[in-house]
Image 1 (cartoon, each protein chain N blue to C red):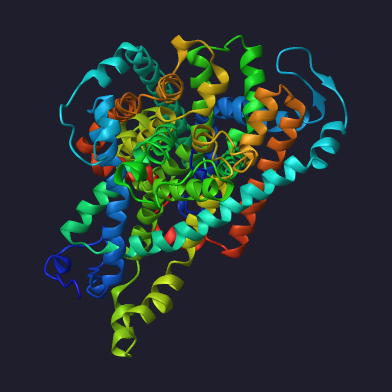
Image 2: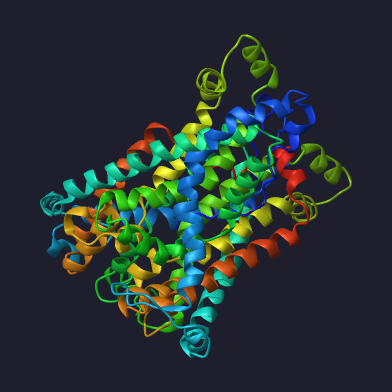
Length: 313
Length: 295
């Protein structure tokens, strides 16, 4: 997965315009050209495809031959196809469950890692190794590890581990969520670690003078103080989960049956396996739309995150 | 029960801020418990990968999975290397370097322009567009990218992987770099300007050295994403000699699925360069991983 960031960051220029003084206007001219290379590449391979995906959703194309317009036909067929809704359901199922697993665990580990003892720093070094592995490598490893006949469970003769993990719908989804957590909890812990370290110690001191216990402090100080961090991290998790492709593709290829066929996989299968780029583009448009809506919703939830981001910087 | 080590904390300072001793946080036994459990969850599979990759197949089927190999063998690694992995490795290096150098270069220029030209509507609009790019799962645009690459006659080439990768890395890079360039004191720019420096000169001799840590961070973040990227190679290339490592891993696994030790050896080999990098420059890599999110 490529981590997709949320739009939580302030518009640049906010600081600058206030103190740059009168010479500002005269300066904006000569530097503007420097933005051009990035602008051109981003427009060609970012903006044009974004528009293109919507345009292609109204066409018929097999991936090789000519492209024909066919109006709303794709949208009609895709939206009335139970497969689509199944994929939407699976996508949200994985999104919500993996959020629910990752968030408390990352919070806990992040708080733990915020302590500055040596051994914690050492643990952190080990925690982050999964982040270095490609999703393909991770999926391949777990496929072998969970094999009911030759995997870890069979080798250790542990009945619980010796299940057909990837052969049963519910188990396969649980495995995906576990692996996603294995891969990304370290990342989110790191974000929370940074957040916790910015909470003034005086707040905890005051609370303990008032007789608040540790658990009380965690819920009345740590969590409220981390509000914006939680929103940032959640946005990354939620929007990122829309793009879980490599992991699921290598692990289960959407199976068993269609149990783990998330939207990204549905798009790939329709487009590049069934050669129906039109319907695949409809799915792609839905993914883009979902990403935007979810990012905006989460941003709304946090009110303006601008202030906190600026303070942190 | 409590883990109480308060000595070192009071002397350390959070970067630039007031002393933030987390005395109370250190009594967090619940977190400590979670910490050690998580360690086991992370380390056990990793240990298993490495140990198994040195076993021969009969050992793999008969031995305890965690036992050290009775007769360690490098045959698995040999098989992987003979399966053209050096070529895939070179492909991955080309694509990764070929992406991060231009990506970071043009993002740096863009970030510089956006900060220095603040007040320009054009630049604010461009910046807004990049920020939008952060909220959109760009992988979802793969079909039109595929069409574009075919039309440009780049299909099945390494350049086909590089160009979209550069574009996809621009939004986050510009965001992180502009945050850093904003921190460069305005007076420095002023005094250089008075001395007759051009914007290009200031970018090179002032902004570049002062934002070097951020440039490293952004390079690592993008480099890792490209090195581990799977979707673009899967869709935009076809011939075996254009494979990058993650794709090669997948096809190798399809070919040798029965030979688990060899498959795991391929996992170790493809990850090794990054683990070495991690060992050498852990701090920079970690800041690269969270590029700007924890700020």
